[in-house]
Structures are given as C-alpha cells and as structure tokens.
Amino acid sequence: MAMLDIGFHERFDSSSRVIYRHLVHPRPSSWNRLVTHLSTLCARYLGHSVDLVSPDQWVNKIRNAASRPAEAGKIDAVKLISLWTSDALAANIRPTREVLNLPRLQTRITESESPALRGCEPTCEADVDKWFFYWMKHDLLR
Image (tube, rainbow, N blue to C red; front, side, top):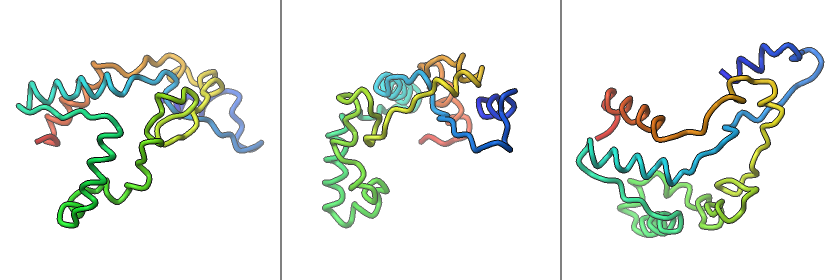
C-alpha cells in the first residue's frame, strides 16, 4: 500500500527527477519477541518447539556444520557463512545499525508521503499468528 501512496502522491513528478524512498517499517519490532511467540505456536500446534539461540550460538552451529562436509551440503546457510558473523548480527549494541551492520534507514520523508506507512503499527504477535495459520493452512509447516 505504501508504494501506491507514494506513487500517487500529489507532489510526485516522475518527469522531474528520480525519487528514492526507504520503504522499511518505520517502527521496528523486537525480533526476539516475535520469534519467541512463533516458537510457542510451533510447540502448541505442531507438537515441537523451535530451539531459540543467540546469534552467536547460531553462527557457531553453522560453522560446525560447515566443518562436516556430509552435513554442510544440506544446510543452505553454510553458503553464506562469511556474511553471518557475530559482529554483523550484533545490531543490539549499535543503535544506529541494523542486522548485518546495515545502516538504520530514516523514513521521515516516506512517512510524510504515505498515509499507510505513517499509520502502521509495529509488527506484533497477532501478525505472527496470521502468518503461522496461513502457513499451516497451506501446509508449509511440518
């Protein structure tokens, strides 16, 4: 919806210049809170929980898998191991950075032009519920 808001904004003039807007959620949510809720849903409806580990633990598990050739071929994340470093995942210690050390994008102008983006609420557990039950309905979870 935000793309349409911006595209049809009264000040938008595609002939004058190229306009770039950051189309990211202006009010990010805690990843930990959302994935913890997802794990609870998995336990309740699928009969098994999802092990939640810190980014450091996850990177170490991937590195360990990469060291075993028979296992490495079965895990797609091994292909990106150089990207998934502990430092890159430590966004919580750098408030101006996101995961993978990407800069936190400003959305002030985008929000001023997009009522949908300006009025959106942070992602919450109810959104996770919608995703989860959609995935269940379409047999995307096992």
